[in-house]
Image (tube, rainbow, N blue to C red; front, side, top):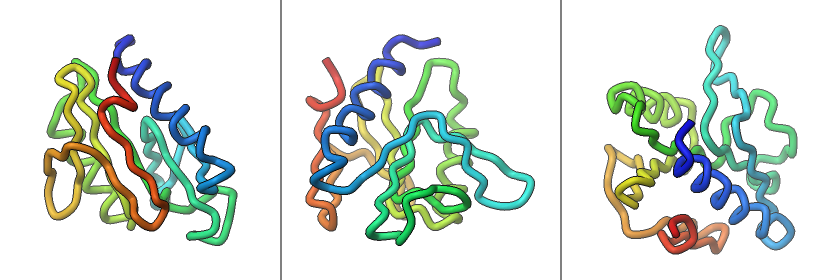
Length: 133
């Protein structure tokens, strides 16, 4: 296990947990999701917003945000395929975090490096300072 990956995953989870009451977000780490019959994917962090999807239980529902955090042993081709699968499933916000270089990426019409993540409909803003020591 990569300790940097775990630390970023923990900080990201804490970011969303601290906003559960005000933003009505529910974050899960390691949640098994089923985008289609016979396929299970496990994002590092999946965030659901019940008032936007109409249901608290994530059974069979695409998350509002899917986050992958790169580890040194991840193959970029496999990660890109997973990000595409999230997009095909209808995930609204797809994030890729590279903790070793402290870079943030957004998957929207391709993969783009960004300086921070913003979700205007939730009034959320996440910066590298929120994730990295």
